[in-house]
Length: 258
Image (tube, rainbow, N blue to C red; front, side, top):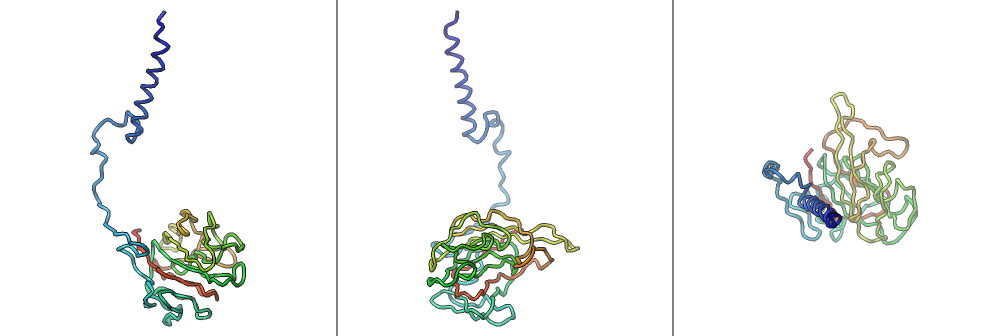
């Protein structure tokens, strides 16, 4: 009787497993490590160089929409110069003056917005620190004081208003600065006006993923169901006057390739 066989068999199995897992650690199964690695190397195109901003500064390829120095990039929807307050580098809604929009239009963007609800809490639900960021003037990421302030879930801060509930409530308290980092892919329309591809939105609220590549069913509506209508490829970004003195700072975007 060969008394070594029971010992050798587990050792062979361990050696086989070690070879397999070693291959996996190198990037794939052991059998995939044969051949020329250069065959799967792609050298072109080479990504463009973008220098990240230090601290709160925007990256090198950003279009700066508000840096605290003025409102030259903005106007009211009726064409008036923007009448919201700018004080100490902060932009604040003047209730009753109306929404403001960028003078330029944009399509696919990475948008960074910092905002702050009033430190003095007044009202509740939708009446507390309410504003909004509208991509292409139509697709709203809700701004609201949602810190210990219950409202309908698809209308709280970082919701895609009346369409998508955020994955988490990442709100800071009243008077604290908050940030949205939004990736927006604009809808495309066929020549006959049909939707070739719908809009999608990803949102990080204070660094927390709260909307994960959500497909929009159409523009934001307050009553009823959304429905697309053809519009331009490049449309303004709009900040909402909802009669609450919400403040903004450090607004910039990066235009994305289709």
